Length: 166
Image (cartoon, rainbow, N blue to C red):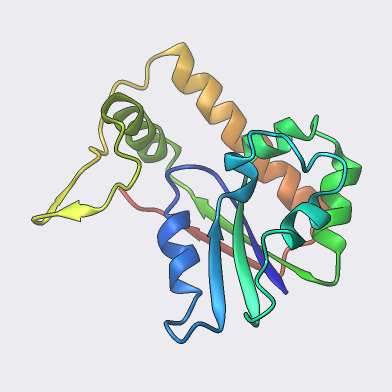
């Protein structure tokens, strides 16, 4: 079985992926297999691609699928809907509701190269405040709304987790 996290960058998806995997090796966080493939090898058959990353010794696997991975699929609704409807896949949505905070965190990660975003010495590495009066913020917010609207419209999720985190 594959728990497929439908999310966007800077939503806590890495931490959530590892939280879903107990330390007893029953599960494995595959992280971002679609991202690291760069759009290659999975557009025709994403389930086959995921199976190629699975370890038969594990009871289940957790993988992340971001909005830009869907773009690599040519925004093919049928391909993604087929993947989400597969009996081996348990879709889980993780949405960080504060687009402003996601954007600021994304900008900081792009600027610093630190995509971890963890707390160091009690301070968040990525500030939750930045200039959002830009065209890039509007494009970012539009992509956020479009991705989560698509997910809600297709109603194939098993669990929808949303949160506001500054």
